[in-house]
Length: 534
Image (tube, rainbow, N blue to C red):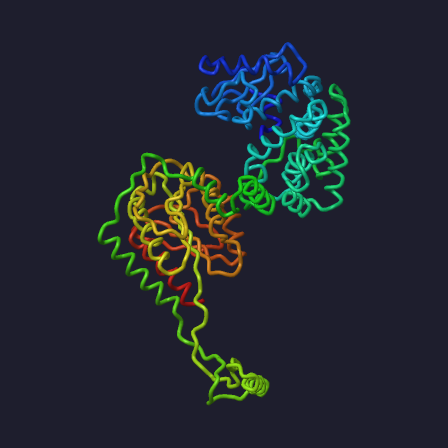
């Protein structure tokens, strides 16, 4: 969904007209008169338009821009001059309607004073989203269909990266307020409401609702009241704009929480798929390997190594049998009188006895433990010699784990986090890492591993293995994430090249390895030891 600060105050200058999409621009310029009642507006449709958002409104230029990528790959997807075209491009048309609502009703935004703290402006502009759409629906009830579709389509999983009051309030203003504006329904936002309520509490959420319901009654040009409501919104969330002028940013050392999960469930429901499928689709879209990374068939040595590791994991999962009891229909054993009476009654009734009156001491194996292992590989320039061996290790570990009902994932982190081997899949090819870049994506890699394998969930055996020299871009954030995993019972193994200096993190088992081969051996040994000690 267009972020308030992005499309109400677009940065830069308007996008030039794209001749390929000229027919769309002309058709929607004619149509915008119907949506807004204004005759002085122009609409520009072009790839990359929107001032950095999917769409935006430039008040001084009296111009609306819509990014053509939200309409289709080519302009001939449909004829914009025909009334039925909106059904074929509901997201793009919903963006047009949304910006039309701002053009018709957001007159106060041009009257704000520059001395207003940015956090207050952001709160007021968040309130304006549902207020403007509510006014648009009041004039044109049929527009609600397109607005609701666009909200459900363009809201992203990044709207609530952490569970703090500001982001909970942002999610409430983005979705819950639209229920009172009669754009969304209570059923639409049921999961969101529960998560927001958990973070904010009943009293605080009730106060926020009072604020946005008041905003829905404010006149289109009443900047004073809207800014005052922005101040009240910040105060309700425990933010003092005098002390904290800027919009709160999420702490990179904090894992996503209930807000992110509820939002993912909501988006999965909108898409008509399960949350697991939605997460897998999102991961595949964001963390795919660069086109320069090559795939190849595994060598005979790699296949043999996978078979050997699979055998070792199988042996580790199969504990020594432990004595237990089991029911038996015949002696020897201890007689259970109640079951004997039941068996006699079954015989008397002419039925085959199912009750087992004898209890024998037997040797039964306990349930086999399951294991979740995430391997994070540093792809920065200093780790160049480890790239090829660890690419092979990722394939070997995943192949062996697949045969033993274990879940493993290998993630390379540099400037971005790249998923090498998805979990619970038997990879058919080895993806060779191309080293280079920094280590800015370490936090993203840890969060991705947690998202895929639930490393913070108590119960199954969990291990995070990191192969890196420890020279991270944000050491403090990395330490906080590691500490969180440690306190949740997840083992963190840090393998540091012996010939490289680096940072040592707390709450990890740090080992110096002389070579990539030793690093692979240590990861395998740690996984086997974890299973054996379960």
